[in-house]
Length: 98
Image (cartoon, rainbow, N blue to C red; front, side, top):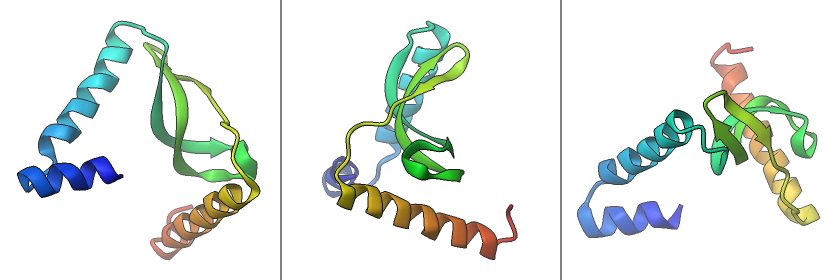
């Protein structure tokens, strides 16, 4: 997150940074790299969270996301992640998204 603010402070915008990230994902898919990148996708029980998309490390290949990784988090970090899930779920519910 801080990197985005650094780009904004130096350039005034982040479009180049966003384009670089998009290119990195495209490269991982096109060249079937099986690379681990931070990627938002619907959680399937990681950290006890389901049915909302959050970003965690995921292995990316030509088949898309082939594996998700649960890095070690402290209890406090897990609680914060679960609070983020609740906020996302509340926003989705408020928008009528199931």
